[in-house]
Image 1 (cartoon, helix red, strand yellow):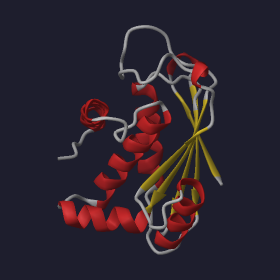
Image 2: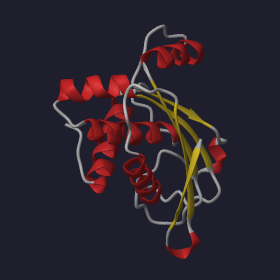
Image 3: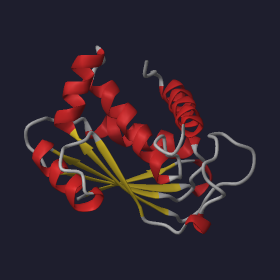
Length: 173
């Protein structure tokens, strides 16, 4: 597993661990590294640790079945690794007033690259743009957003996705 450390001003250290367990689709690790670091900064997650695992359809179907009891593939899964009390009351907005979270192991995001490629094609987006959206979507799940909870929660999460993607330089229609 590749560990990507991002040092920025004032001693902030963010760790992003990347593991690619599929060999069908190439990924741009530098782009993922930059987007992950920017996303964690936007969310004021100082010294946060995040793991990203890239898989194929078969691997994702196995994980989705094992952990959610759903026997089909999906595009992204999130597995929080912290106690809810470790963060400010989530969900919270990016660039919010106040301090940052220090030393939090956020958790794991699993991204299905085959699904990402299909969705990018279906939505008329670039593959890189779709990966960026899945990263944002997965991190929001890690910090407490859940679009399946209610219509209000879905609107709140979609609004946050758009805001974060705008800061990262793209938007999901």
